[in-house]
Image (cartoon, rainbow, N blue to C red; front, side, top):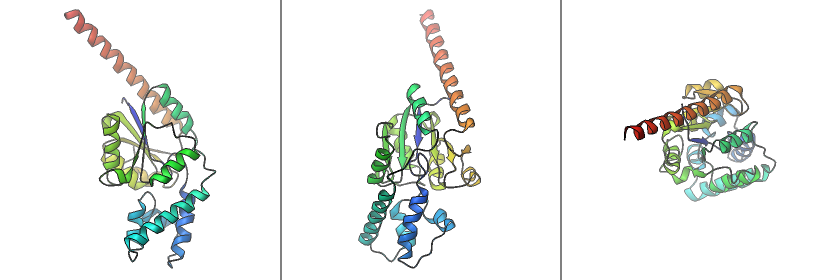
Length: 239
C-alpha cells in the first residue's frame, strides 16, 4: 500500500466535540418537547448535516426557521468549544505527514464557520492543504461526493489515500469513495465502524497499529520509488 494523501474528518475525528454537540442539541430539542438520549443522538444526529437533522427531527419548521435554528445551535457550540484540544497523537501524525511530504485534506459536514473556528482553536489552520465542506459537494456525507471532491482537488486516486472518520455516515462516505478508511472510536464503537467498512478502528492517533500501518506505507513508497528509478535506468541503457 502506497499513499500520497491523508484525509480527515473534523468533528469527533481530529478533536472530540461530540459531548458539546450532544449538550447543545439536547437543550434545543427540549424546547420542542423532545427528550434526547445518546441512542437517539447517534442514530439521528451524529455525523449528519444540520439541514438533514432539522428536516428529519423538526419537519414542522419552515426552511428559514430551520436555518435560523441551525445557526443558533452552532453559535452556542462555538461558545462552549474554546478549550478544545486535538485528539491524542494527531499532532505527531501531522508532523509525520509533513516529514514524508504527503498531502492533507479536512473533509467535513460541519458548517464553514465551525470548520474555520475549530481549526483556529486547535491551531491547525495551516495543517491542511485543502478543506472540503459537505455543502461544497453535490451531496454531503454519507454520500461519497465530499471525498470524491477532495481526491479530485488533491489529484490523487482513492488507492493513494487513507481516510479517518468517527461516524457511520462519514465512514460510509469514505468507503464508498474507495478509500482505505480507519475509524476513530470517539463517538461510536469499534463494532459499529467496522460494520460499515472501516479497515481498523482505533481510539486515537497514538494507536500502535496505526503507526505500524503508516510506517509500512513509507517503506512501500520507498520501494516503489527505487523500482521506478531502476526501470528508468534500464530504459536509458536500452536507448
